[in-house]
Amino acid sequence: MASTLLSIQVIPKTPNGENSYPYVDRAIEVIQQSGLKYQVNPLDTTMEGELEELLEVVRKMHEVLVEAGSPSIISQIKIAHSPSGFSMDTLTEKYR
Image (cartoon, rainbow, N blue to C red):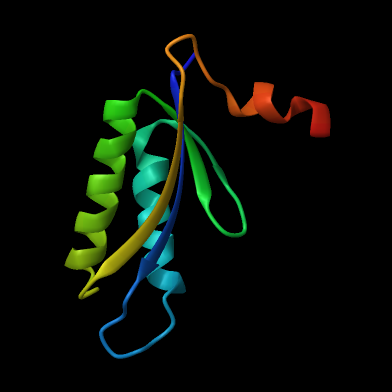
């Protein structure tokens, strides 16, 4: 079981004020390519893993957005960490 859940909402500034959705899609592609368990939600995406690898994914997301032309990015991040383990499924199963 993973020790950490990390939810992230990226808010990329776009070069010419265009829609940011294509940039957000690129950020989600980084998560998909990471191999980590994740869930895309309407306002953020939650990942499950070890803290170090999750933070590395966040770093890569920012790099990809800058490479795509975003002059700046704000990320809102929530982290839940427990050495004994965390799981999205365990925390939400009673609601499903």
